[in-house]
Image 1 (cartoon, rainbow, N blue to C red):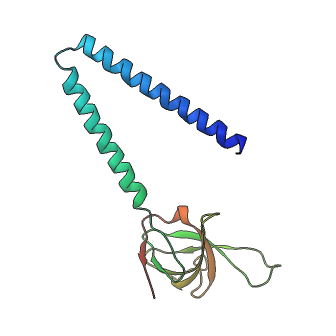
Image 2 (image 1 turned 120 degrees about the vertical axis):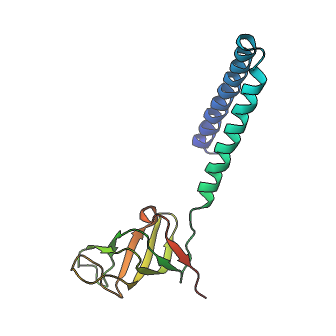
Image 3 (image 1 turned 135 degrees about the vertical axis):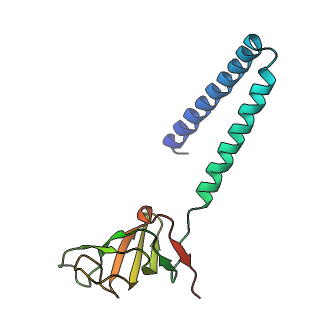
Length: 151
């Protein structure tokens, strides 16, 4: 097994042990100083902890997954890098405007990027990506897009 993985597991186990010991010490302190209200306070803290965990899990699951041939409708403008056919031309940045569409060509989950084709866009200024251009977009920049699965 990789020594780095073993070190990470040991560190996480130690942190978990510290959290358990700290929770037990807090519960004892609470029962000593507030004997009548200790159980109500602990139940309230459990409910708050469970609610926070549920909200975090829901937020994590809310992130969209992208597949090839998806249609993405943007809710915020996104900066993209153009993909050129020849290697000598430089990469240019351009903007895909709000409520415009990107057609997903490839998904690179390791680097967190999408290769997409601009299917509609504002063309009023040269800073906007031309329609039909292939671009690369980082998925971290896509804030709550609408994803439509196309067959």
